[in-house]
Image (cartoon, rainbow, N blue to C red; front, side, top):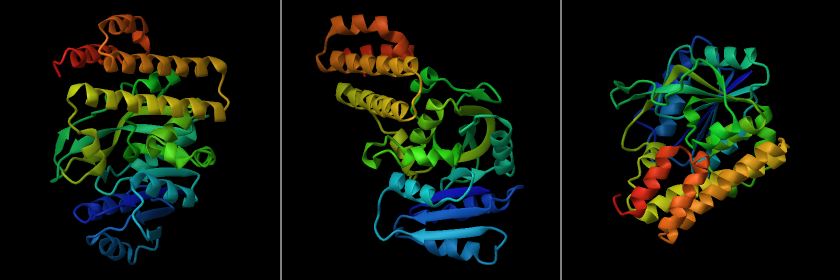
Length: 307
């Protein structure tokens, strides 16, 4: 059984196109759960009109009594999903026609796979492709290690599929501690040695002014204070990953690896807070536990006031 989970909020401009792309899939889902987070526009009305007469899919529209934010909204909807495979959907993207069929094929053909993240194209408000294959995934299918996972925080939910087993681990976590719902899903996957990436483009992600997630991604960051904010995001993610690793009982070597990323991140924070050139030089010894070598160079540029 396949469940689609969508969180909606003020999505009247594009949600019908997204729903249409889901409905026209070569492999239809068994159910589509749409959780609206107190939209103030015509989003709910558009959804209600769209699903009328489309009984070949089970549609479940839920309207929250109060706004809870997109992360909690997704998590609540995920809890209610009945599928063995759950696929996340944003309200403003477009799915290529074979997305569900291909994701199901991969999930059912790879032993041990728990979560899957696929390549995306970026489109504009008029559906024109702005950039192809933006994530830079190199292989058709690749299992990801804990170390590789620590080098990247953005695993956008709109190109994510996962098995229902992940839900039991999600329920053990305090929602107040979560980094994001999509990153957390893949964190559980990687700790269970079940996270895979694919360079197949199955989703077109829309860039527009009101896209909440993209506005967060594109936040302008200048100065040491803003740089520290970015580094603290990595620290928060690593600390949660360590907690998840303990809950999933992965081997000690992987937990030690995560702790090295935490230690290095704290050293980065220390160097920038104290404006310490000596500590920055010492940090080069730990460069393998930076997200990448460019992060080390950027720390220097922020410390020197160039950014």
